[in-house]
Length: 607
Image 1: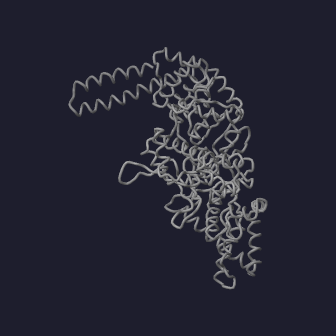
Image 2: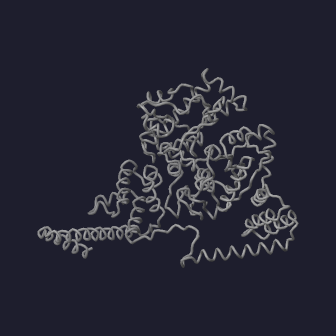
């Protein structure tokens, strides 16, 4: 099939793709009334303003204005062109489209040309490494190692695991032959430039190669593991940060775990990608991992859109406990339900599964510690209750976590504290009330600081529409509803009625759309717009209220207002030019401009 997808096939895929199911794979949606709501994936927000209509098969964010249908959602969320979005949704329902690669490359994306080259090079490298592992004598030893470690061939295929040769420049030579610009590929970390000349060598050599994918399945980095570790060689070598790989944003396996996260309603958060692969082998598919970095706000934003419940399953050593506490506190602050699966004997998940088996590991995940219980366990570590300071510090740490919790939780854990420490509940309650009062005073001081309220929840300021904004939006709404409106305006006295550049851009594209498609279809029009900022304008216009019974009057009023506004704008510009001409003593030019202004003012009063 060529790059041109038949219209009837596009329509079939669109009508058979339920938008709620599609978006639910990326955003956690809750039904309220007829529509579904969630946190917008296109801008930061704490209160859901992202609405999905199952009846109309469209989405719209009341905060940032994003909107469209299932195709445009995939285009925006995965940063891909229309052809790729159709292909993805087609594959989802078993309709496989064989789109020629060159046609896809001509489609616009939000990646720069340099970034596209880096992504394509990483995909090429992943396929090359995987071929070496599965089909060559060079990869045989590594393949046997993986099979002995419990990986099946299906596991290896699914995760695209590969092998890099011992040669210094095998990949570099291949990339050059394929026409990749090596200076750009070097920026992505795949290859390294020699200091004294213009040649390049491979970063990864003689290592088992684990591709790192972004949340949409694109290979953006690698982690390479040695088969036989020497004293001066790291077991794992990872790609450096690059224009396409930012550790603070990547959650390993999110692309594959998304559907399982949705089904289970929870995600298992781990520290290392090998732990995730071990969990997959144990039959647990809703696990993700950070990539050699602590949990970040960007990670939390991705998780928060998908799920409310997160089970932290970090390493069982001291560093793992500390990291788990920090992550739990960050997630708790974002109002997520956090539980912690604690592993014994300082083991990590990969080690635990190999030592005790999948069933034992699943039992730990099935009975995680609550947030407060884990905080108490963490606070007790390395403390001796025979020492007063340790005892008081333990009580203080737990009580700080209980401020703001429900009375039931507070009573439950204060009883537990009293039992553990042999301090009376009354004494602990007295300390708790003092702590609660102190925190209330601190909060009050904060909100009164400099006479302004601080720490208020973020609210996006809604743009106040001017009369011109409303006229442009309403006129575009009528144009989207009827091709005849566009024809009539094009054949009228003012064939370009809009004032703002973005509306003019939409209008030009709408003219082209109606030349190819004779009937009005705003959803199809959205799909051909490459610029998501223009899609927002179209969506806002499509959702604005028209009066079908008084369409002619509305169109006439809009055209009249916009014509006036156009004249007012031109008068303002000419007035500025007149003043400049006067300053420069260009009296003849100033007189000509003044005459133009007089003519425009007369025409304005005649409208």
